Image 1 (cartoon, rainbow, N blue to C red):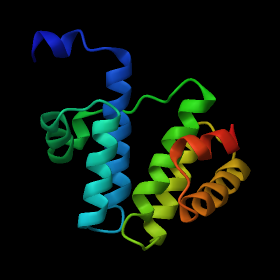
Image 2: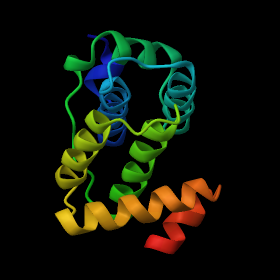
Image 3: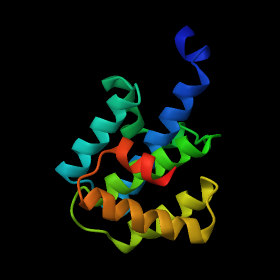
Image 4: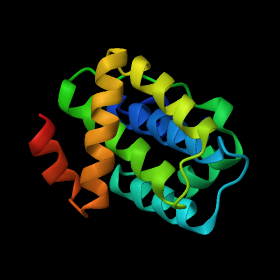
Length: 139
């Protein structure tokens, strides 16, 4: 373990855990296609992960614990990311939706909020709204 890993910020650890969850969602239907891979890489970069970190998380997701976010805005952003990943291949597989619901509950949303946010975010993504626009409508 390097010195930088020992003193890694809490935010960066949270982001690695979030990326791990995104990866697990993408794998939930049995495989990751090129569109899912592209959105995973895009989100990984957006949250500040290096190519090496992304590659390591893909190879060893079990090494990266998940840390729930504290604020409502961050929880909603993560849920938006989750839905972006499962929609990437154009197929909402039952296994992905079931895991998404579990992640929604783990983020601290009620079952009713999980459904409500899923429906609203799904619709807004279909309408090509950006993450910021979706967040503004939900938060």
